[in-house]
Length: 361
Image 1 (cartoon, helix red, strand yellow):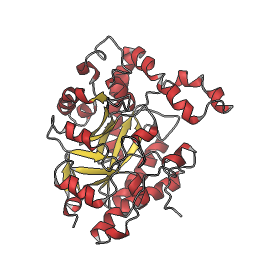
Image 2 (cartoon, rainbow, N blue to C red):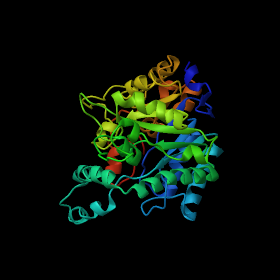
Image 3 (tube, rainbow, N blue to C red):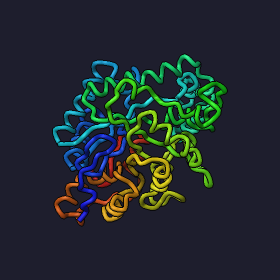
Image 4 (cartoon, helix red, strand yellow):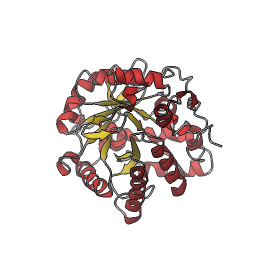
């Protein structure tokens, strides 16, 4: 059983031992606790871990490839994964947060007049003027920085690069946030500018986190609307992307992009796979689906039918890092199924307690 899940696959130029990928996840943990999470997930049998939000420049808020300590941190993460026969992908990320605008909310947060839930939409409201008014020189600098970061990621030992198509890239792609009148705004073609990674690394597999904005009903604000996929997907392929990680665009409530089981629209298993169906109309490159993928029978069918080529999970592999190994050993009945309650994963992160799971002791 589960032959397709367990079959090796060439995902955009990188051979994976099976079809299961750990999706990029923010943990909010100490370094040692984070290393242990990575070790357990890698040892559990998944084929690749995507390390989320790797900055494309120096960072005051997280680990960066551009400084000695951060570079060593990523080397250790890669070493832990490789020791467990697991590939590692660096999700290159540029924040679209307007730091100067954020400062005006600091007093309210410190005095608790503004909650973290209230802060998110306030910051999202600052994205459009930030993107629209960004100097042309800075746009070019950020674009170039993706290439430089990719070179450092390869040097550190990452097996694949993923461009974070949400955040800065997604906001530039979004007509909601991008109101520019120069060559970086206006038409979908102008908003589809991508990074210089391929120029710097001609042979590196490049995954693209393709953030799709949905209308009717409206979900997500960054990224591209479904009708624009026919423009963006071929342009990204031409620019050197070798695979697509397809999901819902961000910059709305986090429970839309990390939907609980009782979500009014995205409560069903495989809730974002419809976007993969749409992307497949415009490319033959492999796509990775995500969203409520917990049931091995359901995942096997989506893979066997060719609807997706790989399946990405975060909450399910937090609930049971041994998901893949249990299938391999014939113990599917022993899997701890993620119930998509969001209590200790998203809830733990929002409460500054770190990303965990209700199954953890």
